[in-house]
Length: 194
Image (cartoon, rainbow, N blue to C red):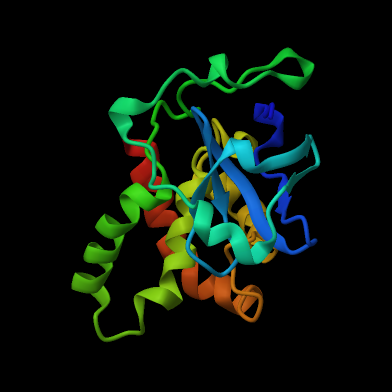
């Protein structure tokens, strides 16, 4: 099934209509699903029934997804996705993200977790703060914020966090942003410095 760069962020649903998350990344013949309030995972593109710019439907029922999950692609096995991605509108997915890195959240989250544990071991749990780091890391390469500083972007970031799929539905209000914005900024700064 053909995927394009424009589909990044599109909702992914199982054939039974269950929301599985959003398309986060495409590498070779695998796609990375950003699952709401769960661990992200990889699936083969061959499980796609239909792909439109605004949604992707899988030929699998939600209960069958775990049977098809893949290990994350190895960095040295990354192929130029232009060969497997046909661009709707003619645009193909670049071989690297806009910050020049092919490293995803799953690759860097253990490092952020270690640093957080050393600095904040008595102020809550990693699970409470991880969405802030994850959000900041993703937004650092979001096209809406390219060429802009944290200070110039913070008001829009606060608003974007409320609807970001990785934010806990019960904690995506202004008070959670106030609690997590330091984590988001740390991850943003780290990714931009890489």
